[in-house]
Image (cartoon, rainbow, N blue to C red; front, side, top):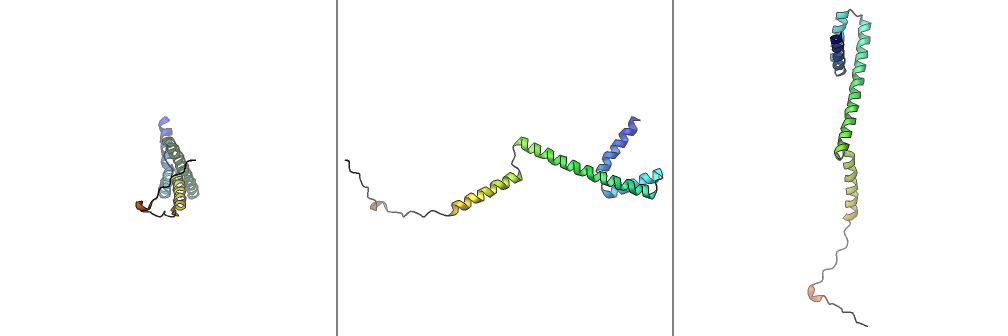
Length: 119
């Protein structure tokens, strides 16, 4: 009994990762072995394809959640954070690109130092 349950669970997990073509093939074999009608086989196939897609989508979402959590724990920069910083840097660079007017260079010989008068 336990072995049958384990096999059924294993098959269920396998079906979750199957492509539509593989599901069709598995259902055809199952239908043949269990004498299912075409309608029953089609209904079973539709249910299995739907369940496979739902499971795959759930697992993808869960994997993304786990990945985000791992990144947060490692204090890594996300692409979104990186883009925000990149945009901010571009704005700062654009702001500072307008050059200040260069000061006139005066030869050292012409510099006259004025002293303040005390008093």
